[in-house]
Image (tube, rainbow, N blue to C red; front, side, top):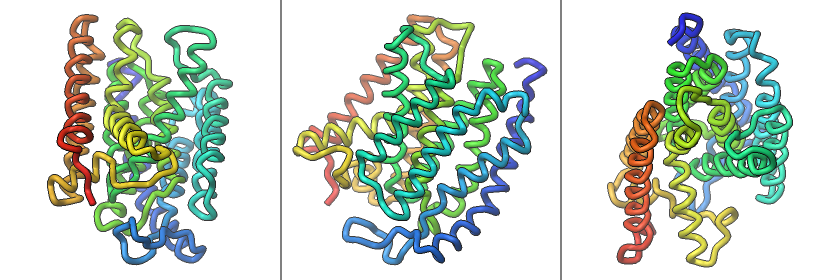
Length: 341
């Protein structure tokens, strides 16, 4: 790792974001209670009293402040597009938390935010021309919705985002990319600070303001990550592996709901990997911890692939794909699948 890229810089950014989040979350919790921005109990929810929903706003504010005050300002111009898109996502989520938005309005907003990224030059670079633009739109909207769908259990979405951001930070440090590492480190700190209040039983939820923001930021960081010492035929796998759990969960949910003739985007249900693990293990906390372990396994595979040859990388890819297909069969198809009531 080059001298110009001390890991201590990432630790400073992560720690400062953590401290900011610890201070901002209680403030946002009071604001949420005073303004009625709460998640009310219902038949399909487990909490018995209203839970504040502005945790996502706290994550956003802490993230921005930490980078403004502790990040390298020489890189600010490079992240304007990312910040604008992330702000749009967070604001749209905030409006949805307070007043509600249709799925199609949110999808349109996600496409606009992804368009801002593309316009600012942040795009996938694999095929060239319009194919990369389409792939960028699909990636950003897909990962954003994957984190949003994953936000179904205390500590789950925030913890998964934190672990993914940790591995993005490590990968950025290994490849000498300060900007990507700083963004990822700030996400680590913000998620860690939020988790202290969101761990079961949660005192605050991130809401769509948080899940949409985190999904968008992870998608953008993944696009910015570069590995000049390895071939693009290998390196495209790295962000897919780091975000393997949200991608698998979204795939599982889409297949399950389409098989039942339901709209995957608008139909709620207990068909996520977290719900099925909780049913098998008998504990929501244990289910979340198992999801964390799965995320770590995906991340370790991503680090290996970042240093691997073509044949080694594809051997890992086929092994991971095989395990995912088995898990999909086990959870959804075998003897009717694992279906919590």
